[in-house]
Every structure is written in C-alpha cells, then in structure tokens.
Amino acid sequence: MTDIITVTIRLFASHRDMVGQSELSWTLPVGNTVAQLWAALVAAYPALQPSTASLMYAVNHELCHPTTVLADHDEVAFLPPVSGGNAGDEPPFFCVTTDPLDQAALVRLVQTPHDGAIVTFAGVVRDHAEERPTIGLTYEAYTTMAESMMAQLAAEAHARWSVGKIAMYHRTGRLTIGETAVLVVVAAVHRQAAFAAAAYLMDRIKEVVPIWKQEHWADGQATWQH
Image (tube, rainbow, N blue to C red):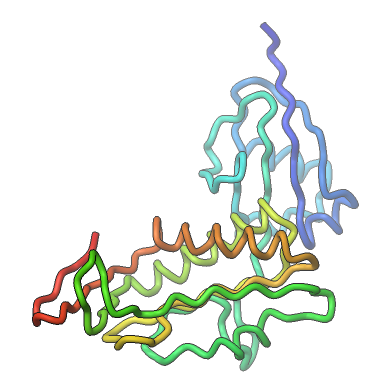
C-alpha cells in the first residue's frame, strides 16, 4: 500500500494567473487534508497567501471544510472570492429582496464583452399546486445566510463549468399569480455551460438555501411547504 496520493488541483481567475496554470497534478502524503494541500501550494506559490482568509474549498465539485481528508485521484478546487460583492453603487449579485425583480437589470449586471451566451431562469408564481387552485405565495428567508449560500453555490458552478458572472435574486413576502419569485442569470462564452450552470443553480437553491414557501389556496387556507 502506497503512502502517497495524487490529486488534481483546479485554479481559477486570479489564482490561475498567479500560478500560470489552470490545473496541477500534486502528490502528498496519505491522510493530508485540504488545508494542508493549500499550505503546500502557498509554499510553492507565495503570491496565493493573501487569498487564504476568504478562500472556499471544493472536492470533487462539492464545497467542503478545510479539514476534509483527501483521497487518491480527488479533484480539489481552491476558489477565490466570486464576483458577488458589490463595489460602489453596483448592485449585489446575490440578493434576497421584497422588491419586484428586474430581469433586464440582472442581464446587464452579468454581461461582459467576452460572453457569447446569457441564460436566464425565471421562477414565476402559478395558479395551482398539488392539483389545487392557489391565489399566491408567501416567501420567508433567513436573508443573510441565504445570500451567503447563493455565493457558495456560484462558487460550486464556477468549479464545474467555464462560466462568467452569475446573479441570483429571490423575492420574499406575499406574491400574486404571475409575479417573478426567483431569477438565476448566468453568463458564459458558450451556451452549453450557461444552460447547465443555470439548471444546477436553481436545483441547488431549492435544496439548500434557507427560503421557505407558503401556498395560499383559493379556499382561504394556507400551507407551509417543506
């Protein structure tokens, strides 16, 4: 049994520029963690050190804790801060809001001259659920955590696909039939990556982001959906 494993390191954005490569093959002792791998990488490329405080980690396309123990042939992504913070008067890329959602504004937010595709998913309030007529929805969120989770999901998408800027907005409060409840907007050079990332992000929002939905039925009753 060997006491050495080999992993693939994926690097993006500023990290890729600092190292000069987007992918590295790295050997390390059995039992080493993601944090130990990062420390070894920083020792080899000291310019990476300032990123440590805001770094996110992913192993085999899933976000993980720095204490995660690595296995042979793992793919490890060290993710710099995503394009989600707002600078100056620029709107945020990840937002939970009571305001109506503006699809065109989010397209402008993510689009760059480099992009050949922008995919938008809009979730709209419909007039039925579970074969029962409805008159609207109420959404409630743990706002700060929800926005943080959206940023983490964007990092997951960047680890999986070659995409550009990403925006995710979700409404809270009472919504009526036809109103837009959620927008996911993904820019990319090519459409395949943008479509795949947008579908993945919407699925993950429903799975892990702390936003709850209450159906308002036409008979006057209301039910929280879990």
